[in-house]
Amino acid sequence: NPPNLQMESSFGLRQVNCRAKGGSPGFKVAILGAAGGIGQPLALLMKMNPLVSVLHLYDVVNTPGVTADVSHMDTGAVVRGFLGQQQLEDALTGMDLVIIPAGVPRKPGMTRDDLFNINAGIVKTLCEGIAKCCPKAIVNLISNPVNSTVPIAAEVFKKAGTYDPKRLLGVTMLDVVRANTFVAEVLGLDPREVDVPVVGGHAGVTILPLLSQVKPSCSFTPKEIDYLTDRIQNGGTEVVEAKSGAGSATLSMAYAAVKFADACLRGLRGDAAVVQCAFVASQVTELPFFASKVHLGRNGVEEIFSLGPLNEYERAGLEKAKKELAGSIEKGVSFIKK
Ligand code: NAI
Image 1 (spheres, rainbow, N blue to C red):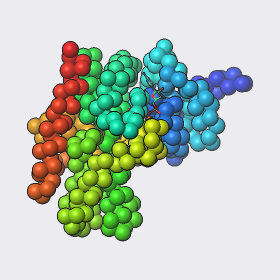
Image 2 (image 1 turned 180 degrees about the vertical axis):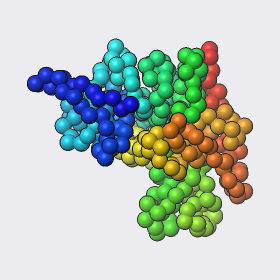
Image 3 (image 1 turned 180 degrees about the horizontal axis):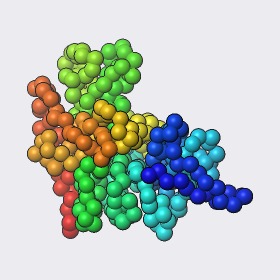
């Protein structure tokens, strides 16, 4: 790893060097749902990532066009497109990282849980493919409801005998990205200087920003805390309503997905101190899955950090979050078990 690759060109077979610039290993990344609202800008941004040597774009529609388009970018990654279920296995074979934004998004008035019936089946099928073709890959699951789709993926991998909890991560990065932005606005800071831990899950009250642990250290009035907590928890709905029927967050989500995927790849490469929030199998609370800060390394999640000291407001929020999360996790587990 990384082996060289043979690509067909107009003048016969060509050797493609699968090392990233500077000689560091290049990684093979697949995006499942690559022709969608998130998938397309995500493909664009991953094609620009110097850690990626091979980029596989899979969807059930429109991947030839997206692939032709993105493949003309003069960056290092070799792009290949895969269309439809019969090409899923080829799309997945040999991948180091699989990012999944496949599935339907919300429309105004819908909760993430309303997506369960369609997206649960899609995630199941895609994870069966991963278990068969790249069981050691790190999986970044974006499809909603994340609080249920991550348990679904875990059950599929358990059934296949390939489950490694360190390698399955629900992407909650957009909640952190939003929290950093909104907190920076209130504090009058550059968002790049702000770090807000967001724990729990990825839906409504399960999204729990820990405003008492914001860096740089600061304090908020009770009014600011209410405003920020509400805006961070409902940031997704703010976008769904503004798009009035045309879908949910796609551009900020693609940005967040790439920020998170890049952290996973830097961890795989062996960089020190790569820490991000993610929804993972966890013993931080009594629930089997929970989002908190995790250390990303060569095997995926190397360490899960505890929540740290919470204030009274956050403790009350945690109780509410756990109650809702427990139901969403159970719903995912029983979808596969039944
Ligand atoms: P979209 O509808 O624009 O794109 C979804 C893509 O998935 C489409 O191209 C569709 O053809 C594809 N797809 C459907 N079934 C598939 C299958 N079996 N295999 C492969 N691809 C398949 O939706 P959008 O806006 O890109 O959202 C995708 C998902 O991401 C939704 O479930 C949405 O709720 C979720 N999401 C998650 C966020 C998070 O923070 N984790 C934030 C925003 C959205």
